[in-house]
Length: 303
Image (tube, rainbow, N blue to C red; front, side):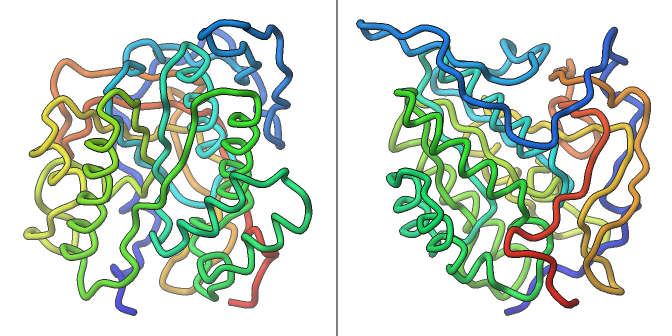
């Protein structure tokens, strides 16, 4: 199956000139997903109150009924999927219907739905990981332990009574970048149109959610975000910011843990919107602090 050429780290990390401001305090991010302790329960239509992890400054600027936010990540780090899980939790805790889109082939929808409806038993996890997406030899970070933790977090949130769900939006097969990204955008837009009052959050590589035409290797490449923005001018695209650390990355020489550079302004956990999009069409940034590599969920494979 053809796929986009593998990029060295520098091409995946854009300028930090307009990155998030330094946090006044920076808490160390936990390795594991925060527990979902129910604080209060409601007998009426109000959602239960749950612990949603460390606060995300600026979350109120993007969480709204009918909203659509594309978050662009560096694959293979623990903190980014955890940030998305916490953002989804924050939205659902405020009464929003939240739908989390993941860069996973849509052929995995049935397996994902079965896992979300399960009790979280070891057999449920094993059944999910038996699916092709998790077993492929090309482990580029989209099938990492952190990705699995995001799926599990959505399952756990649903069991508390919050209105959260996820969907896979990647194409099952494609011949080139434009065909793949067009199909991804079509899937996202269809899901958003099916539930117009839902808050849709998508997580993809930060080249896919650009909203301007052109990529480093092809000036005519049309990212997913361009298609989404054309259909949904109110949609937002956010690029990740971090202070550095490690990530499970695929490069020309193979896939594995690599050091990544960052910037002090990526510290903390926050969302910041710009007055105007940057040169890549991102409307703002989300900060996650220091990164820790997340290896494949099925265990480190021979590369």
